[in-house]
Amino acid sequence: MNRVFADLPVTVFEAMSQLARDNNAINLGQGFPDDPGPEDIRRAAADAALNGYNQYPSMMGIPELRQAISTHYAHWHGVTLDPMTEVMVTSGATEALASAILSVVSPGDEVIVFQPVYDSYLPIIRQAGGIPKLVRLEPPHWRVTEEALREVFSPKTKAIVFNNPLNPAAVVYPREDLELLARFCQEFDAVAICDEVWEHVTFDGLSHIPLISIEGMRDRTIKIGSAGKIFSLTGWKVGFVCAAPPLLRVAAKVHQFLAFTTAPNLQVAVAYGLGKSDDYFLQMRKELARSRDRLADGLARIGFPVIRSQGTYFLTVDLAPLGLNETDEAFCKRIVNDYKVAAIPVSAFYEEEPVTSVVRFCFAKKDQTLDTALERLSDAV
Ligand code: PMP
Ligand code: GLN
Figure 1 (cartoon, protein in one colour):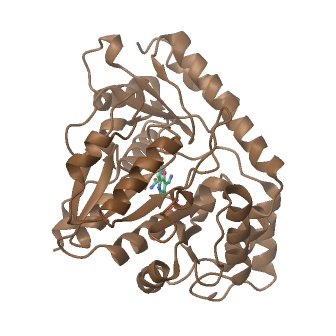
Figure 2: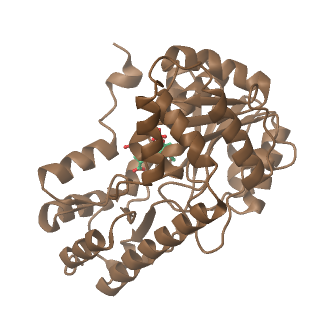
Figure 3: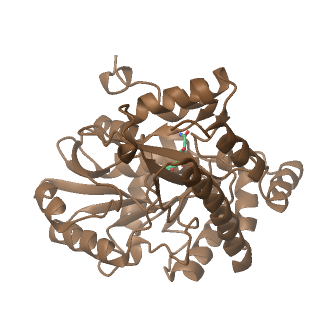
């Protein structure tokens, strides 16, 4: 039996969604919108399936999509990528992350990860034989500091895995933090595996800055994206890996045996979607920011100390000032049982020294869903 996987609990997203189903609760836990998503993109997928895009596409992704990814990132981030040698399509960012980590990390390599850490990183790092070195980020700002990096970087550091915008903390990292990371990656000759699935979901005029665009990082960064988040179609599982040819070539060797390829009709539709006008993406941010404010204002009225969300589908509340005498996990269990609203305890994103007072709520929901959840929570604190 492989202990890396046999000993793992079921991931918190599935566990909380199951609890939500069992309790017939409103699910503000796992991050997915409750509207059907952009109709033209869904229609493009349906048309492509009807018109013959149903057999194995090329392992690296259909050329139209690889070109669309390259054009999209040149337009939005000024990053120039050769679609044929620097872009690969994967079955979701989850597969992209596994392909990237398994392609870079060998037994004994140290890999720096930041807590709160997305659930899939550590098991894959360990399966590769890597040794995780944890950096603990602190609420409410969750910033990266020079002292923390100095403690974990060493000549054994092979890679960092960095998530920006950060799920669950809803931080969009400023250039200053990215330059700090870039400086350390260069000093210690480390590869940066950057999970940027939330790149389009930023608020209040904040823009995502990809680490690959920071000076000195072009050839040592593996940038990962997800169409599921860009188009609010989280079940589609179409991801992207972008990296210089020597890094991408090895990631492709892993991809060929993890998923090999990705549903071709979805690839056609994502290629179409990536070409949408700026207005589409700006409108999506505006609508999500409105939902964020609706939930944040409602929770604040009830008495929850809300930590402002800069991006992602999530906002967090800090229970500490409430003096409830219960952990985030106990709080989440109580509200799903007693109030029929599911949320995610942020301690689930820590392996060591968890922050146990912060709870994550997903606001990517219809007004009515948010209002009903707020009504139900009105005397929860
Ligand atoms: N990384 C992060 C930080 C995420 O939040 C998610 C899903 N929300 C993923 C990776 C997985 O993306 P996908 O569904 O495309 O596999
Ligand atoms: N990324 C999603 C979240 O943070 C969940 C994805 C999953 O369920 N694996 O809620």
